[in-house]
Length: 306
Image (tube, rainbow, N blue to C red; front, side, top):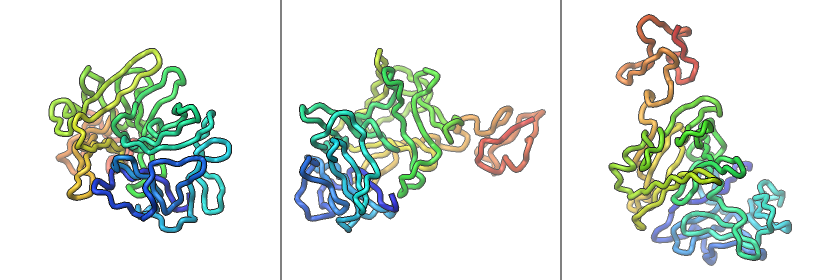
């Protein structure tokens, strides 16, 4: 999108001071649009949606891009030449889009039915209320993919989704094929690799796991309304739970996985062992040696003991 990106600004404003002086609105209708120097603000002023450049600064040129409902009933993103570069591709015609106080961008048709919502396309972030899992009817996964860097939303190698083998855990993949980390199985209360969510839980996170005929998913909610939290898959391949601190106007990490290189799945390969106290953490068990010595000095997945 030529150095111009479209994004939710998660929880930027609690004592709200909008970037721009336009009248506040939380919706787009058939007769309105969102230009690149405007934003949508949720009703209770918790979330703001708008455009940004890779520096994460707001756009000031009103003609750079536009988000609107097109004649075919889709929400579309237009560039400065009014060429369509993104569409929701819904089958039912959209009449309005609303930014909710849960951060969900909801598209409805003329009868008020939801035909598309951003919670089904979470990008690199899971907000409270997102159903993260597998739809057994459509056979589609809801997954999250990390950004290239904190200010560049181009897709990067790490992706996380429910285990395609059917077990009740989710897997983080590197380059779509190599297992990098896993949550551990669902115990009925928490995932085995994330016990702090159950036993040390200052963010008041409540996990719900659902497995029915039409789908399998996990959802988290916050039992304390004053807390704003998110789960993000960052560009380093870490599953990070963080919460918003209003005094610093930023996100504070609460839980990060994997914590160290040795927490990465099979990081040292077959017959390898990992020790974070060593300069090169990976080595071979007794009776084996590295096939290629140089591989052990890197962070790739080619480590082999023979």
